[in-house]
Length: 130
Image 1 (cartoon, rainbow, N blue to C red):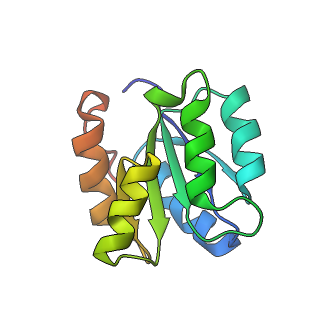
Image 2: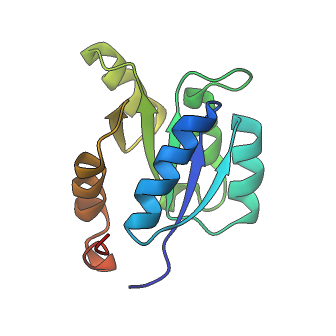
């Protein structure tokens, strides 16, 4: 499997830890931050393929963070997933319009994340066994 790096952005520590656990089980290297501002700094300095981005955060919202991530030089190559409790149809459309590639509803189940990543990153091979 080629190196796969994910940036996890959530102001809630337990949400970051759960996402880290799931992604690491799937063979991803992870970096976690707790704000949109820190996500922009990490993305500018790192080589990420995936960003798991909470919508409701103090400071920069997930929507604004996504817009700014897309404006970075490598922003178009990022696969950005909204990680949120908000899932009404009009919200989904708004999130996709901000530049998100996909939306995951909290609490995220491992199987759902596994399926989404297998579809988005078919060249990375199959997930690692537990």
